[in-house]
Length: 262
Image (cartoon, rainbow, N blue to C red; front, top):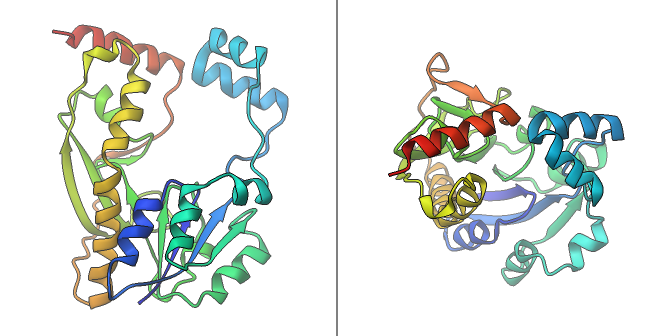
């Protein structure tokens, strides 16, 4: 089965797992270089205050609020582990400015893929994920349908959950609502050695999930290639779609963690 991978990076383990499956042929890795929407200075300022508060905003603006998007040349020559992994298996790598541009759509179509794998991208439209013959699958760090959207792990920690879900599902027009192929849960226990630096904990915790995520994506693709795979429709009346936490919710997270501290 011909497979393509759409990613912003950090997919080297996924590439290794896919290329290790005899029934899968990874025929292209498509890396989108324009990873953040263009916003005016006023919009950036307003968003920073909303999500991080005045103090952090002042710190950001004292240095550099938002880094520029990597150019194609920079992305190709910066020692990108995803690029290196693809090249080690002889897989073509394509740098696209925007998945939804006419030129990008044409390149993706030219891959003539049976299945798309979406791993660590922004929200993409059906004009992209619907190109492969069988559609596309996505790895979501959340127990769908109960935890849809993101950011991963934050809301589970906020709600004092003891587990985090990992879900491989078909991509649908609404975020994280497509039919589920594979799913598992992983233990979640906050390490109070991080104090109230919950973001540091989340970043490190998510790194421990990378191998599981890569294996699940490749296994799901392998099942789909066999033609005999589970496909469970989500009941989206359960759970909710979560969104980026604002400053008050981040402050509440710290308060809750303090209350749970042994």
